[in-house]
Amino acid sequence: MVCNRCIMVVSQELEKLHIPFNSILLGEVSIKEAPAPEQLKVLSGNLKELGFELLDDKKNALVEKIKTTIINLIHGKDNDTLNTKLSVFLQDSIGVEYHYLSTAFSTSEGLTIEKYVILQRIERVKELLQYDEMNLSEIADNLGYSSVQHLSQQFKKITGMTPSAYRQLKENSRKPLDQV
Image (cartoon, rainbow, N blue to C red):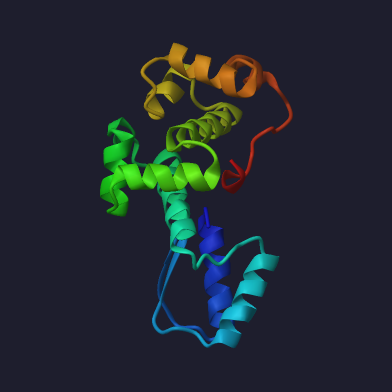
C-alpha cells in the first residue's frame, strides 16, 4: 500500500469480510484476531484483484516495510529527515540492524536500498517538475540534494534527459510508486 486511498480500499475489504483490525498503516495491517482460513483466502483473492498482495512471508513483509518507509521519507512532509543518514534512519524506523535490512532488500529486489532511494527521489523530482511550482534549486533543497548539479546529474543518469528537458515534456512519464 502506498497511499491513503490504498489504506481506504484495504479497510473496506476487511470490513466487508468482517475481519476486525486495530490499525492500517501504509504496508501494514494490525488485525485483532486471526481470521478464519476461508476469510483469509477470500481476502487474498479480493486484494489481488485490486492490485494488492498479502505478505505472510516475514522477509517479503520486511522488504515491503523498507519500501513503505522510504516512500514516506521521500514523498512525505518531513524534509528534515532527508538529511539523516539513510542507514540510521531505516534502522531506527524499522528496528532491525541495517546490514540485515540491506541484504534482505538486495536479495529480494535485485537492487540496493540506495538505488531504490535514488529511483524514488527521481520520481519525486518528476512530480515536482510537472507541478511547475518550484525551481530546480528549491526542488534540490526540498529533497536533500547537496546541489542542483548533483540532482541534475542523477536525473539525467536515470531518465536520459535533463530536468529542464523533462519539464518541457507534455507527456507524463512518471511511474506509480509501487512500480519503481
